[in-house]
Length: 176
Image 1 (cartoon, helix red, strand yellow):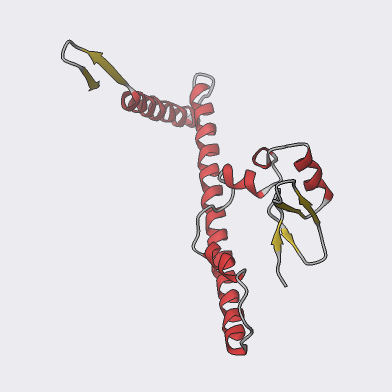
Image 2: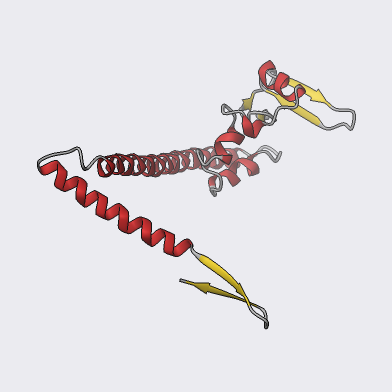
């Protein structure tokens, strides 16, 4: 029993399910449902459809490189039946699934933490912009935020500034 992957959305296709399309050059495409088949026939790009795995990987929403993905590729090779090998394989698959779940959870936590930091800084920027409206102790906080962001933007602009000067001898890069 082999579990195939959908060409368009990368979801699992179990035996007896899905649609197989064979092109004139004998290349086979497997689809999990008619939705994927229709999008393929309309020549849509899976990396632009937000519900596909290709989109999620291309936009950093899922793990791209992980050593646990190699085990899935190894499982697809047919081998002669051996009971001891099957028992070891099933145990290894369970361990790999646990490892994959932990790594996936860690990946999502770091991704969400970065978004939370961005949200906090945007709120702090908003406070800094409206510091002239505020009164009392919150005004002091707003002024501190304003100083922090002014200093950080100057530092960023200094790092990005590169000027190329051409002289008679050749080109020379100067960083200020």
